[in-house]
Image (cartoon, rainbow, N blue to C red; front, side, top):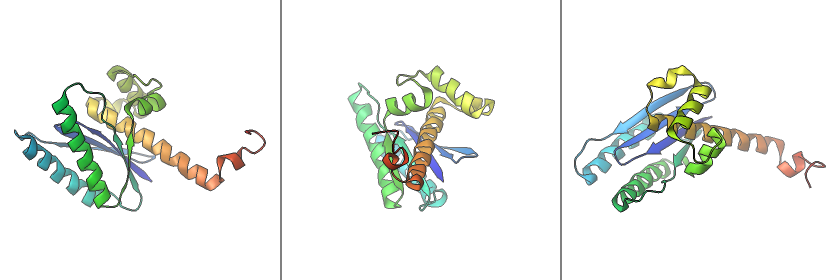
Length: 173
């Protein structure tokens, strides 16, 4: 099982493909001047990635929800990028889930309001010094993928073990 963690911005999409043994970072950027051209550029790159590198049968995509942003124009553009990623996933029939910012930070880092430094520290503690060369967006995508992988592993375990109520019969009422 692999998961793809995605952190979006208005100029870049950071993706991390994670399985239980390794991870790989893929970033899509655009320097187009107009918003329409930039979005088209990002969509073309992301489409090609999903088409050629994502296993439609086994992979799962986890995309960070849009955080609170006060700039109206930025929110609109983030919604466009998020919707584009979701649309590409749906087009290729790939399972796609949105992840709340505070939820993944709480579950992976231990603090729902984790700072950039907290995220970097946790990423280094989980994946070692080799991630120093990555940028903040990639660290976010890596920890989003970590959240996704653990979530998927738990779901698989729950299926194999039957319902949690049955599993904990006599312990939990």
